[in-house]
Length: 384
Image (tube, rainbow, N blue to C red; front, side, top):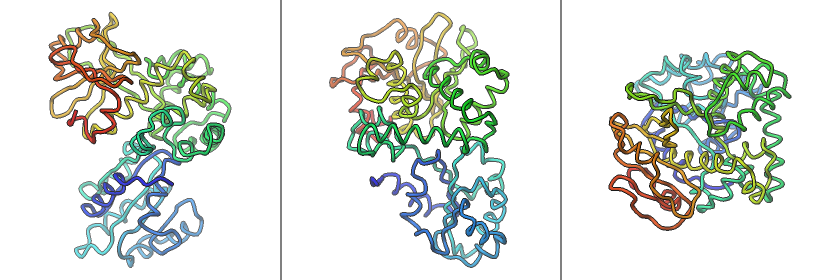
């Protein structure tokens, strides 16, 4: 497996700062591998809540956890949410003999009600899939195969696709049921395929519901479940300027482009470059890379009813910066970019136009064309 030095450093610092660290991420994204680099499985300090033996060890959680010292790992905590009050008591001990690393295959929102008792004691860290920086800036590999380690690092594209198809089947037949997706496995796969065909576009819940023969409210609930499972990202529109006619429908993204391509039946770069969704796929990848470098920022998109649009708007500390994503040799200033820069409600501090080329240049005092490689070599969008 590949070393994720930056993630390991961030996790070590979090464990030093906080008595409880909640590490969340989609299934198979690498949480367990990361935890096992800190605490060896099979020891008294490691609990896997999918293992019947470890579940039995935690039948009396206070008795099991109170004597332990050092870092204690509890994996798949969403299966045992009644542990959170016990962790609160243990975290409040004056001598702090143990630090708890708690892993969950659900979003912080999905776990929030259970984790409320840990307010002020828990630090939440989300583990994404592998990014381009994790594989020597090989953005093409991450784009085609996605960021799940077993897919990204597979020996061949064929092996990678086989893993992704198996992953989708497992999600549909078992894993997504705990997030409220109660359809038969074949219907869940069709639902995921419908979402893939909406990739990076406005999501029409009604049309998806009609295609599957379910209610619109059910379709919305299922998307909420996929958000909780950290498989889908719903990007909200920027709506602060009430004086303009702005689009209010969210855009939807399956977070992992490799999963999107598997649902499309696209197995190679050549096939992807010929696919009508290539632009949406590229936009999804670039947005993911930007958000990895945008700590504490709220993401949106901006779109007016007459079609002017900015693909991504980040708001932080009352300021907003925009990102427009182009697969073009030499992007130029468009009417959409000009409209965004002149919008008095949006008030963009700067607009970055990301593209696959190699030259950085200005289009406007507040608009810069930026090569993707420049983005990959910074740790934060503040460094652009």
